[in-house]
Length: 329
Image (cartoon, rainbow, N blue to C red; front, side, top):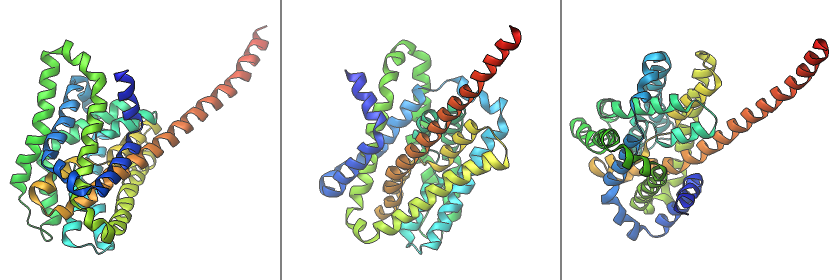
């Protein structure tokens, strides 16, 4: 029964995320109480990630380094630059612009692996890219943010590096260590990890919405437009670059698209609370809800195409089999 409830929660994650985001908007005073726990929530997600990681997750780094490096480059070069461009096109103020840029500088979202799986993409490649992006985050996110946002807000890159290592890297490493030393315990816990991560991500987005509930009425629409552009361009350019320019297989291209277009908005909200004006959390809060909606839609579209393609191939194969039988007889 509990596993079934966890499966429902994970499957309808985007719907629950929207519902609880609206709840946070309606009850900002109460939902703001979640804000101090954001580092703990994101640490929980990262611990869950570590508990599911193994050495096999790094195999593709050595067997297909070009694909992995392409996805990492798109993640840490393309998405920050798209964020910077969007902020200038929409003439956003310093706090909101910094929030957008910070989202673009963060690693890919854990949900990208789920979306890749649902789309019938290359899930192993997605997990490898997510793992590499997360490990690199303490060393890349603060300095890219410093480069692009130093003229907008004060940026303490060294302090950000420490915080990212504390709330992202250490929990991941702890999860890996627990997996290696307590294999039997982890085996029983793993089925519940997606639901635990889902709850933690919902709490993070609720905190981000609550912190900016009063601003949503005045700037929510323009920020939402920016999020749509940022996320859409990330998914689209990520897929196009992988599929059309690098000629990667469809399944690989889908994995790259999700790794580029889906952001670790939980980390962005945690960093905003620790280092920036709370208004900078609004892009991450809206992005956190929106990219799960677009990710689910893209996953369903690609999965449907894969099913129709498989059915068409089966229909073509049937006459061929019949013809072969006639020739043999």
